[in-house]
Amino acid sequence: MMHIVVCVKAVPSSTEVKMDPVTHTIVRDGRESVVNPFDAAALEVALAIKDERAATGEGCRVSVLSMGIPATEALLRDGIARGASDALLLSDRAFAGADTLATSYALSCGIRELGSAGMGDAAASGASEQRAAAPGSAVPGAPEHGGAAPGPSLPDLILCGKMAVDGDTAQIGPELAGLFDMPCVTDVRELVAIERGRVTVRHATDAGIELVEVPLPAVLTVAKDIAQPRMPSIAGVRAATGAPVAVLSAARVQADPARSGLAGSPTQVVRSFVPERSDTCEVLEGSVPEQAARIIALAEEAGL
Figure 1 (cartoon, rainbow, N blue to C red):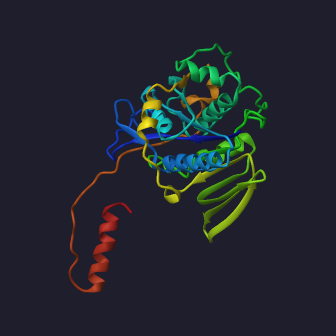
Figure 2 (figure 1 turned 180 degrees about the vertical axis):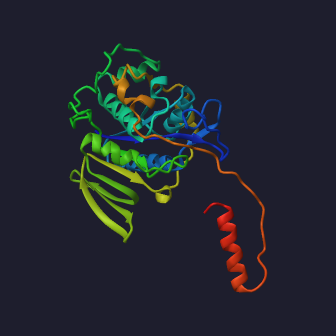
């Protein structure tokens, strides 16, 4: 059976966000969130693959994975309502304040957990689990440098949105590919075919649209307009209400504390802030040279 993992992120539902002055990260507690639109498109791509394979009698498991606060579980349950097979939420204060490197590491731990033999039992319980892990322990089967080693438990396809609307780094997909030593195609605009153990896509480059074929397993990051997310069906909503969503801690997925959250984030944010908005407008009058001089003066006043 083909296995697809879709990584999704909860992002603020509005543009009005608050920043933590100490950690320089977005304050998410108590803020209404939605699934990152790029990730929602990635989920739709996965569900379309699942539908196509079902029509030909082939099986396909679509797992939705996220790292976030407990409230993120509702967004994962919505993914099940739309057609996903199961979902896993990594939720632990040890993951808080993670940069893209620490986030991709945590997600790699979750992806391995989704491929483990015990994941079915964890999903069936629908409850958070705790398992002791020695400090510094790595992902099971991972090489010593900390990346996750390829193996039969890995999914055939990992899908991510090209970027998150609240971060715009576009780094998670490529970093996951690096951890798993998989080929990665970014900014995918069309999934052309999956056959004979290979996936063919069209993706955007600086030179235009390029047709690319890579072997599976692979990581794809998709553009927001690659697909229109479907609405949940009534049957899907009912099924999702009682569907188990595994909520696991850092210890449960054996994440190394030194590589998780702020502790595992080498990126140092010097300052992060919400830009001030102003509706002030100055109409420049006079000759072109006079207007040009005024523009230069305004730029100097602004410190540009």
